Image (cartoon, rainbow, N blue to C red):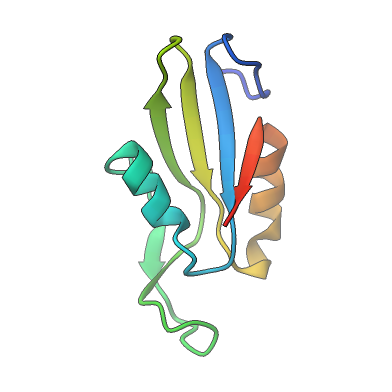
Amino acid sequence: MTSFMPMQPGQGLLRVSLLGPMGIGKTTAIRSLCGSLPIECEVPNVDKQAHAKETTTVGLDFGEIKLDDNDTLQVYGCPGQERYDFVREWALSLAFGAIVM
């Protein structure tokens, strides 16, 4: 069973959230770090006035990296739009750390 609380190094599971505005590269960063995403929430962008990007994340992107000390790093990409503040708050409540892009 996976814990939903942040864990300390050496205890098996670490979580990091990537934060930043829409189009900054959070999804691309997770793909680069983790390979293809096991969970991806990209949909067509219907708000082209806010950003010209073709797609947008409407949930959390997710990937995992196996570390040398038998830990697993879970990486969450939070959506950049203000209307998804509640998703960011939830992801940060689980995270051991955050990277602001």
